[in-house]
Image (cartoon, rainbow, N blue to C red):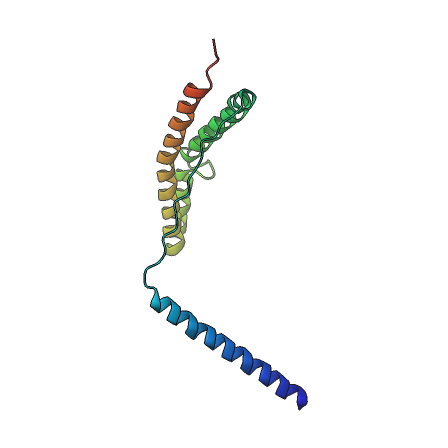
Length: 140
């Protein structure tokens, strides 16, 4: 009996604190209707030593270009290539034939997003090539 009274008292105290916090929080929020804007992050320019720049141009940049090309090839692949747009559309058609319309719709949406990804990959390719021509030329 003594234990249940103590538990009830603790639960009641917690409920009062919780309700008081909620009421207090709503009055503060109602008093200040304008949210404070978050400041935009400011970035400082990155400076690389010649050794770091050479390593980036010789090792990292070719890997990034190869990764982009591999991904674009996969997306443009045939229905046999897992992850391609054609593969997703074939799966959607198979699901639709089985009567799974919701699954087919999700697969079609994935295929659409993957098609849109090709434009992003095109932008990435131009940025990587631009960086390569501007910063990775051998000094004469």
